[in-house]
Image (cartoon, rainbow, N blue to C red; front, side, top):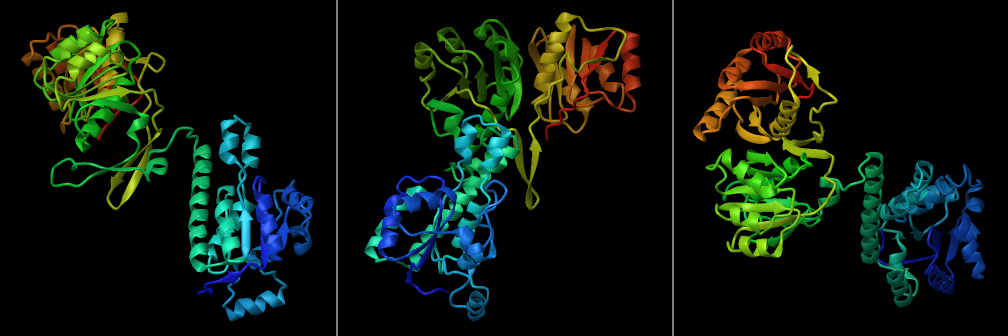
Amino acid sequence: MGSDKIKIKAALISVFYKDGLNEIIEQLNKFNVKIYSTGGTYEFIKSLGVEVQTVESLTSYPSIFGGRVKTLHPKIFGGILFRRDNATDAEEQIQYEIPNIDLVIVDLYPFEETLKQNASEEQQIEKIDIGGISLIRAAAKNFNDVLVVSSRNQYGCLKEILSENQGETTLEQRKYFAAEAFNISSHYDTEIFKYFNQQQNKDIFIENINQSIPLRYGENPHQKATFFGNTNEIFNQLHGKEISYNNLLDIDSAINLISEFAEPTFAILKHNNACGCASRNDITEAWKLALQADTVSAFGGVLIANRTIDKTCADEINKIFFEVVIAPDFTDDALDILKSKKNRIILQQKQFAPPQKQFRTILNGVVQQDKDNCVGGTGEITFMTNAKPDEEQMRDLIFANKLVKHSKSNAIVLAKNCMMLSSGIGQTSRVDSLKQAIEKANNFELSLDKAVMASDAFFPFADCVQIAHEAGVTAIIQPGGSVRDKDSVDYCNQHGVSMISTGIRHFRH
């Protein structure tokens, strides 16, 4: 280990921002510190009337490639990294004429600032610091012998150290500055990663890992839980109790689902699945139809709308018990009504760009995948049967396909007139999912005559198509791609059922 106190005898200074540097230079000059510098920083120090030596004169190598390579040289990094209390290092220092550098003042090219200026790719790439970040890491690594100052925000602290200690630094101080340096370099590399990863929005794990919120418990009371993230970017909580682990899962599912719809839509979710959904010009009417699909499961559910909830709508939804309601806005009189229940969570959703990567713990690691941003629309449709869906059926098919995308596999959704009639979810057999959906619709006395069906995966047999048709379904949407697609197509052709494929599977496990 290095000694506790070290006298600064030589410093390397190369900074992008010069403001505040003059006071540091004056102090170093006062303590007869030898200064090495580069480019604009060298000219700045020279203009102060302080003696300074160029890095090029030290390395006997010019700055090359338009300044891309200036400090990347063994004499510079050797002067920073050699261990003062290591006999072999000391011998090599003398042998190779390595200077003794005790202080490194280096900041980084303004990558983030340039990004905000909508710079060209060429301009942005040139703001990726190579020499600077290497010098910072080298000096921080050898904190036993070197003090590293990696930001102009640290100049005030450095001035105090120089003044109070008469140009000496302590091990504690050097270690503190090293930690700050690695924090800066870590953040810098993260921003560059996001740029190359085409994530202009904040990445769930990388940006929010240091923002944690302890939760009351996890999925069950015996499980501890913590949320890593910043919900303030997504919604304002206007009322209600503390949001729980299960609330967060349902809220996430609700927001992802409602994002599929541009037209006024109301959805009801339970255990991450939609149990009711409808699109209408009037949001209150959409609510009433969404509720019809499953008045039982709606109890204690999560409600979400993509339009302002007014007094009329609030009066209607206030008739049932629910945990959470989410909307882009609420009228004042609607809030007065909804706040009548003390624990009811009321969230005002903000406009935000969701992350495009998803993470999930699995075994002893984490898997990452791209977010499923695809929903089979008219541009991807293949007409598989002789009968073609009419305009109304096509609208219902796309509506149902949006819902099945956000339902647990195996998943079937039945719909009509842009209203969810029922769903079958999470079954080990697609036939069982369909039978579940038909039974639910019958239980709530919802007619399946001329309904449409959406499936999250293809039909390996014609059995689902036959069961759906016999229940009243006249149009089907599915990914297609089974080696036995023809079985289902033949049945549809024989019975006048239209079937379209999207080429996009939507498993959700």
